[in-house]
Length: 139
Image (cartoon, rainbow, N blue to C red; front, side, top):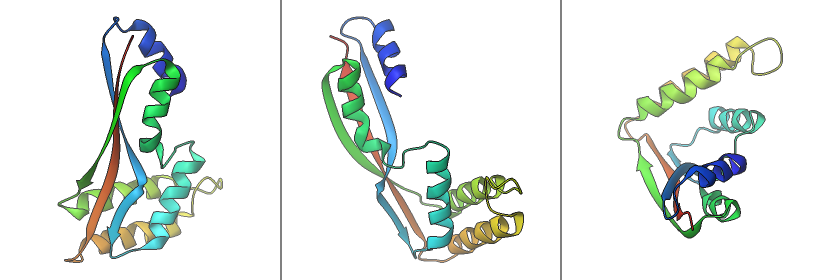
């Protein structure tokens, strides 16, 4: 991200702006909690080089790249249909399955995916995610 922002600053016209948005799991809300699949998904993201807390780092990334007038905000996205996020997470986990040690065995991946899909059927299922947003300008 840092190198990409330096390049974006380079090609942007003086006074031009940029906006970034990224989730931040520090503000992640889920009810009822199901730790197994969520913990596995978090580990999978970290192992793939992802930053679960990237949303809060956006202003620092912009400043470090040379942007000015940096402003930050945060918003929640509440998923009105828990099935959508449950299916996304389940499919990501299931796709990571394999015998090479990169992910769980197929049966474990199916179990974790099934747990997420069952969670989504709970009438009280709630999933909300915080998104960090930052804008900056080229001097």
